[in-house]
Image (tube, rainbow, N blue to C red; front, side):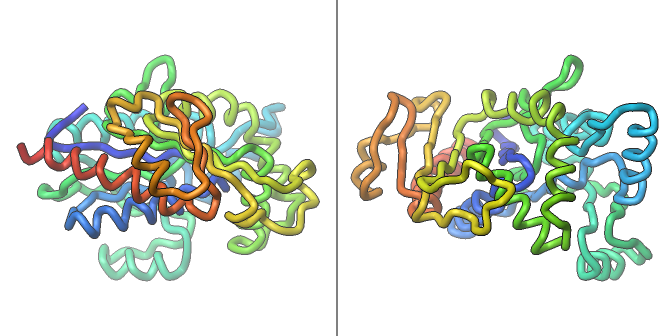
Amino acid sequence: MSVKHPVVAVTGSSGAGTTTVKRAFEHVFRRESLTPVVIEGDSFHSLSRVDFREAVKKAEALGNFSFSHFGPEANHFDKLAELFKTYGETGTGKKRYYIHSDQEAAEHNARLNTNLKPGEFTPWEDIPLGSDLLFYEGLHGLVKTDTIDASAHVDLGVGVVPIINLEWIQKIFRDNAERGYSAEATVDTILRRMPDYVKHITPQFSRTDINFQRVPTVDTSNPFITRDIPTPDESLVIIRFSNPKKIGADFPYLLSMIPNSFMSRYNTIVVPGGKMSYAMDLILTPVIHNMIEQRNA
């Protein structure tokens, strides 16, 4: 891990809500006048949208109904681990973008003089020198296999882990609103991903420094028929620190600043769901500040 070139990874499954944590970090970066290199997890998929669909068909024809974006067959775990390692050592490395929309395609095509479409990747580019830290947000920030360990090169790992029913509700709603998928199609995706979810996604949350887990206080027993996502005020957020001393977690301060919060274990604080962003700000600001102070020392 690097003092001069820190690597921060926010990891969560599809529908987990990593965007909320990303925004919290963006606020911190702006206040601290930092220049991060932002890495999107999708950019380390190994297959374009069209190629992935073809790969799924081929896998199913061979009796494999679990081929998914969560597993190593559809990702460059090696390149991701190499980026974290190289950036930590030198402050540079290779990155690219996965194009999600026509708007993103237009922006990158204008920048690169290319003719790329949504679902494709931009060419690999060198990360310019001079950034303050690398910030990753995606599925595999702390992934580890028998031969690859991206987590070994991460200075701060943050997990976003709503309980599974809530995660599924959020994914069903998001896939419908943003991509037009039916609930049935999303459930098929969830089922196909389950083996890789168990093997490659959930183990990462034992390697994080901080986990944010949202727990609804309303009935989500059947996530596949729920009509509404529980609101922040209809939930609690469990915040677990793997090593409070390493992070510098000041629990008395947090309890005094966040109304109706309480400790459930020596390393775990529970806050009202509506205070999740506020809690993130209180927790992450001093962590990043200290990280940059060490960098500049």
